[in-house]
Amino acid sequence: MSRPGPQDPDLVELAARLRQLSGLTGKTDIQSPAATFPHQPFPALGPAAALGDDAALLPAVATPLLLASEGLDPALVAADPWFAGWCGVLVNLSDIAAMGGTPIAVVNSLWCRSASRAEPILAGLRRASEVFGVPVVGGHTNLHSPYDALAVAVLGTAAGPVLSARAARPGDHCHLLIDPNGGFRGDSLCWDAATEADPARLRRQLALMAALAADGSVHAAKDISMGGLVGTAAMVCEAAGCGLTLDLGAIQPPAGVALEPWLTCFPSFGFLLAARPDQEGRLAERVAACGGLLLARIGTFTAERRLVLAAGGQQQEIWRGEAPLTGFGALP
Image (tube, rainbow, N blue to C red):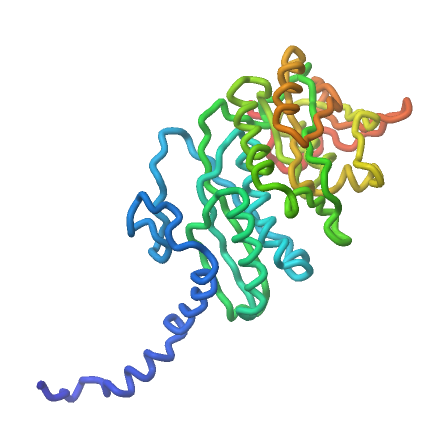
């Protein structure tokens, strides 16, 4: 055995310090997601695809990819952590579906003040992953954060044609496709049509957008986001360089729900679609065959870049193209 030289460290003291290194002890936070999610999301790929490595190994695909991410509202994380975890998956799946895609895998980044605060968030993430059949394949976990926060991303494939809001054109019909089942989650403007629904129906609905893209029933779409139906309509108009007059009489909220919250809520499943007038019959057949959804033609896209609400013979402008909204306008 060699003797320590004059420059050699005191191994006992060095080891004691290294055992307390925050970069080492902090890794125990990963035990929470490790105890929550299945460790082999893609067993056919072998051990290298198991959770715990530096990146997730995914099955090869031969089509373009879609990538979506979402940071959850801190107020939702604080008030309803299980639902925040659920929504972290759901909203990204909707974004992938809005472009006619099929989801492959989920990753998340979670910051919490303790393991007990992280538990319901992780449970919501896992439940959504199971219900929709899209595995969680990795992420980041910190259980010694000064705050609670969640961000989630989903990777998907786009077999094509890809649906883009920019593809809407003057003369296209604007359709609302939405799940009217369920109810508002607590006092929030989150319409929950999914947490108690049949998983098979939810998976069928999620696959519908890719089917509509494939058969040409729809050529442009956008997921109804936290901006609600009206805010999403403005984003579609901005991206496409079009205008739209929304016929409020054609927008029928579920029984007992007032119009304004229905126009502003975040639905579990809701999209604005652009389709040529000659596709209306085929679109209706496709949606009816899926089951449980409401399809309504709520306007026609125009060349004048503005969003207008129309009801009872009156009109009110909500947005005009000269005032950027997101800044992502029509391409030259």
